[in-house]
Amino acid sequence: MEMFTHGVRLHYVQAGQGVPLLMVHGYPFDHTLWQPQLDGLSDIAQIIAPDLRGFGRSDAPEGAYTMDAQAEDLAALLDVLRIERTVVCGLSMGGYIALAFWKKYALRVRGLILVDTRAGADAPAARQARLDMVEQVKQHGSRPAADAMLPRLLAESTHRSRVDLVEFAHAMMLRQSPAGIIGAQLGMAERPDSTTTLSTITAPTLAVFGAEDVITPAGTEGRLLAEAIPNARLVVLPNAGHLSNLEQPEAFNAAVREFLAPL
Image (cartoon, rainbow, N blue to C red; front, top):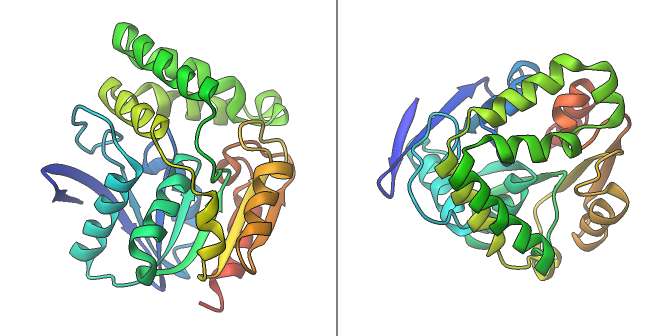
């Protein structure tokens, strides 16, 4: 299905009935990142899984995709679907957007699920690396971004034993448009620090991290979220890296199912 917001066509899929669950994918992916959840949670949740601007089948305008602009896209999508309040689940960049959504639309947040993400802004070296990648993608297309991300995305055990999953993640990254990758990198490079926002979160919150995530380690970033957000719960999934929902879908879905039950 499709809708338009701020002149941008957004593609999204829906599945299931129950608690509205808005699933916000990470960079550089699309809504198919959530396929195990679309398949495994639709009996208890009304899942809305958009392709963020620049990704999947959504339009890829020029310029930076700020976290606020993407939060506004999601609010517009909820308006079209006549959903007033939803649980927002965001992975990595999707987590940055989920925190921006909370800051702008707290009354619309029924719960938060923050997956393999962080609250802090980029350190100077990380910001420069994003800008360097922008130049690489301008010259060579999507492959430099996909090839650079792949080794760090998944747990070592996944790389050894799940060639199919490694290929699935790599193919998803390769098919994203250069304009979308550039827009997301520029937006993430300028995103604000959300650490001070964490203490303001009053919605029920679940943080889910892969035990082998080297991009946003559970022992630092996961613990920070769980300690700074009032009454947040941290779940660390063994044998999973940065894409914990793909690498350990049964354990991930079980944690989300338990979280959604009282909502």
